[in-house]
Figure (cartoon, rainbow, N blue to C red):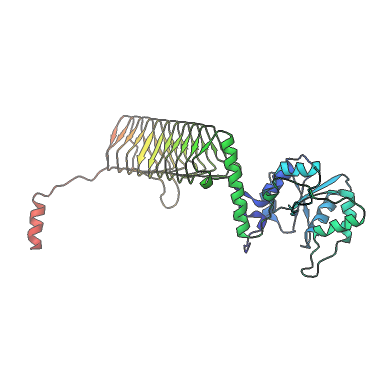
Length: 404
């Protein structure tokens, strides 16, 4: 991979590579699931902290056979069947594993066999056979695949299991193979959503992570990216070039072209964009509008409120049915700390206003266009913070004479 990061931690479909295999294994309800790691694997352990797995430590990298020995040592004297899954096979599914465990009939002679990186052993038999696996002369590693000849020599049955989806079980050792695995995950995600009643206008350009959920009758337009644990409701319209990450959208939400939504909540019937950005902590109420080139951060925009054009709303609590004029800025940062702006229900903020936090705009209050507001505006009041206009009569003509 030519990377400082462990191969198994490279993301694929929104999850580290190893997590796909671990999820598939945990879905089988096995007696135990052990993940074989090296002695210094804190990041890998952290990535799997939420799973019911145990860790078996392989003291030194000595090949796949050595890894399986470490896993067997951690299991102890148990008998039964041992399922081994290579951690760099993100395409593996519980269905594929169950198919192997059920041991369907042998492949026809004309079939081409490939190593899918998934093996099922009699635990007692493989425990004894692994002792006979020798290191190769090239790299000094003990390969798990060498155990099959030893088992066959001991009279054990060794066979490949045919599986229609075997082409999905490729390993990942290069960036090109990682891209191939990503493409597989995208195809699976697109198929899953379409089966659930979601319209994808161009499935080939949809980037949808494995944990994303989308409701029926939602339409995803070309080049939409849905990341992480995003949940989108029903009857939404997500337009081209939008990226939504770890966010929750209600029903009948319209997201116009080119929006970015990160770690935010959007209620039913809200409208975003085009080219709006919701930064983490944004909470958009029912029927609210975040319009053209509007940016929000750690801000609540109440139901029915609208910020239609060219505004920055940071660290703000905005009530219901508030109008935010074009060019409005909540000045939330004083160079040391962030401060909150509160705008109560029904307020009207005129265009090109700067609200210097901490400040409160009262219920049904007005702020005149072009104002800089540094003090609270009471309920129902009009706040003005402009410099006084001065007109210079005949200035243009006099200035032209000076140029002559």
